[in-house]
Image (cartoon, rainbow, N blue to C red; front, side, top):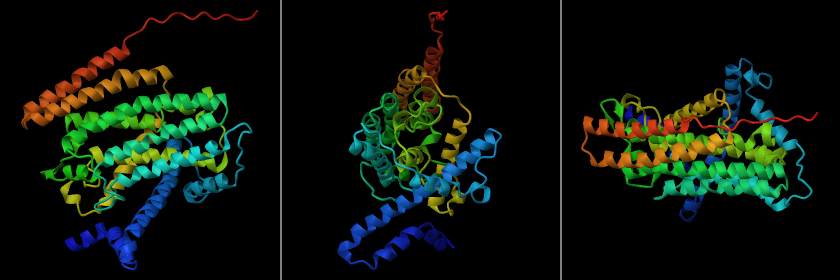
Length: 394
């Protein structure tokens, strides 16, 4: 029976090597890479289509409305209808726009999103490329998104798109710094930048309790900071200021239509799922089962279940919290998230050098809670605002 579970867990790996058996030995590395890339390019856009339906139905339930319910059973074919609409809509480009840069911006955004999946292990022995610096590669590729956003805003020759691009870049840079720092604590404990090594470092159980990094004081805080920063990086509510409809209409992609707009939409969701996948890898044990008696379930099933759980969290937050002001967003990044990420690195160092036991837990919890409370009090401190004087024309 154990052999059956192993074969079920490695079914996709077995199929891949079976296909490579029909290829000459010299071509096998290239064909192996192509098969892995094609699998990612098919699987995650398909998941994107499912997530859009799930989000619209979920938000509809939260807001006491139906959501998609016409195209197919329970509206399941709505993503297909949206895709057909995007492919057939007219592509309108402003006359004064830089046509080449205007075209390359959404392509670059989607390409960067797909490249991020190359270093995320979605199952046991299921990774496109196992780089020794996989975490570094992930964040390096993610920084390309800022470039594509600037290209979209600048090339459109529109004040609204340029203003939206500047707001988006300011937000992304502000939250990318704590996003990276939140992952440093995991690298410190795992002693490696390899995503596969980080997952293996979290393998094993104490009784039924998994050795996931999130179940430590520094890991819990790091996971919370990582997900908050990832929400802002993905332009999701309540950090969706780059596309504040009430202020700048649609932000940096206001001058895009048709399939180009769909690429921006796809890239945003692919980025959200990629950062969620990295959070799973860094803090939630990757593809590992939460309990040892559930280890017989295939590893890729656990990865995608965790991914869907985090996506549901994004949807829940979108349907619950209002949008922040720009000053609130920036103050939250620089006055709370960033200092907490730096303090958390100190806590991770103390955890590493203290001997295991209750004193280590008490010291690290106190070190985490104290700056969190102080920074929260400072952030909530009332400021004296000058009274506004409204003058009306007679």
